[in-house]
Length: 246
Image 1 (tube, rainbow, N blue to C red):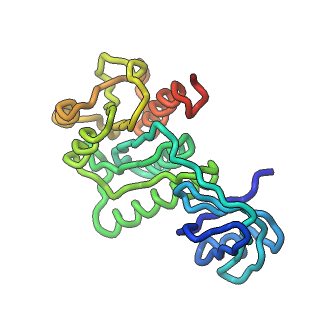
Image 2: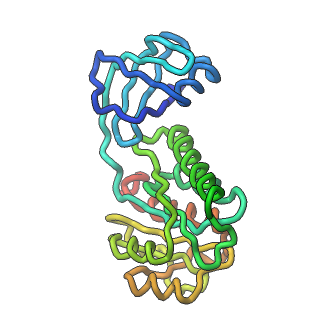
């Protein structure tokens, strides 16, 4: 059975034989909900490549300590994939974040597209972003990722243009595109732009293409905004060493 994974903010000072303390909500959930016990082996991760494995040395109401039997560092997997996800309505955004995280996306950028139905403003936007980030963290733990998926601050179209310019390869999923996604070489830093339920505007497509992105299509089927990015990233990673392709 796989060992339970718990997140800690930093493992910079972790050494074999030393003790690492976990506090706050993460510790409370482990001790009060999961009933973590002294002697049980766990994995601690900072979500940035470093992890500690070892037995629980002590527990409290909102704290537990682990003796570091081993400390390991894992480089960030390449190619890295960033998905610009247009903000969808309801809980479809959280679904997209969950599965994108599970399949290995490095960064998810919430995008306020011109035709997005949902609008993140004020307290509503703050809570929605917090839910996306919580979903990404829990999915990263579930997927046992050494590097957790990051959910950035919400972006406007001008911000996305900058991301396109900075990426080695950028694609825009567009149902009217004539080029297939299979023609894109999956190497370097990859950026995938996923539009909203109402589709991309001509102005958005033009701006992204002018910045260097390629408009591509997955196939004849029209996917929901919450699943299109997942399908695209899976198709790209299936042709890389990350998923065993040589």
